[in-house]
Length: 430
Image (cartoon, rainbow, N blue to C red; front, side, top):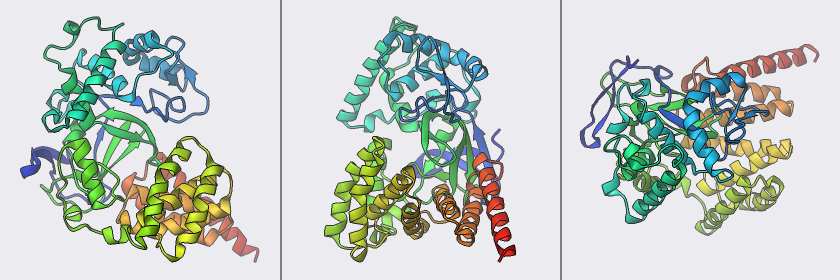
């Protein structure tokens, strides 16, 4: 129920959400279940399609052979929503629909059954599509998706006359494209996409006063700054680490507006993001697509071999705050963890902490999780005092962004207790 926020006008930004009272950082403003959601392509097969929990061994739907569940209970609970798409998935097997086609199909099935609690503040039919502002290329892309959708849904909907009266598929794809959210796990790794209509009222800022964190597929909106009564509530639609020019370009392309927040208008911290010799960071920028390709293919040793020479040689000409070097440091840390090169992983992780503090200022979930990862590496390497300090910093952030009851925060609390106990035992035996 919307006790701490209300729908209202936000000037040239159109409608939005405003606080109904003064709110402190960490305050839980709203919880929302999705109108519809699906696991994303990269997470498919590793999470339960009902509760969105990760599990190594999942039961597969015997009919469509695609949907997977924790157990028979989750499968039974999911069946009312899965039964329509099950026929569709089965009809095109072994082909697989794109994430967007599958999500829009689930939304159509839901529209045919009525409203739900996720529409408390805003209905699916009210969502903006921004079709008029889209480029012809993007409209053409949506048109192709609409054709794919009709092919995919042919087993359930034989004719467009069976659709909800007045439903325009191109318009619906635009609505979903501009209003869906990436569902992430506690460590901010993508696991799915979903539509949360009431939360689509939140406007964007590159210096937001709120953050969304998920527990399974349940969305939690929390304050990360002190918020005054009637102040507009904002989130960031994109990763704020990018330069202001890149952020504005991405926002305009996907959401069809130009961000005019103070950070974009002033180029806030862009000098830090592009610090160092341009010739050198341009080379790093050119390497990023290859690094991302290796990450996607899980070629960890090859990724280390690609990044390590550059990250070592560039230290004299590029500070770690350089955006493109930082991306490479992060990727190399991940790769080293995957191949159990713990000492090297810690070295790269430590180099990311200052830049993360610079770009993810205040209580930001991405920084909190990075601190937790580095703290775990320090703990693993027996650096207990350093680990304790790093993990405490992580806890101070996650208790605000995730809340004290979130499973990840609980896991961190236990890790802190273990670290303190080991350190105490070590001191006693000195």
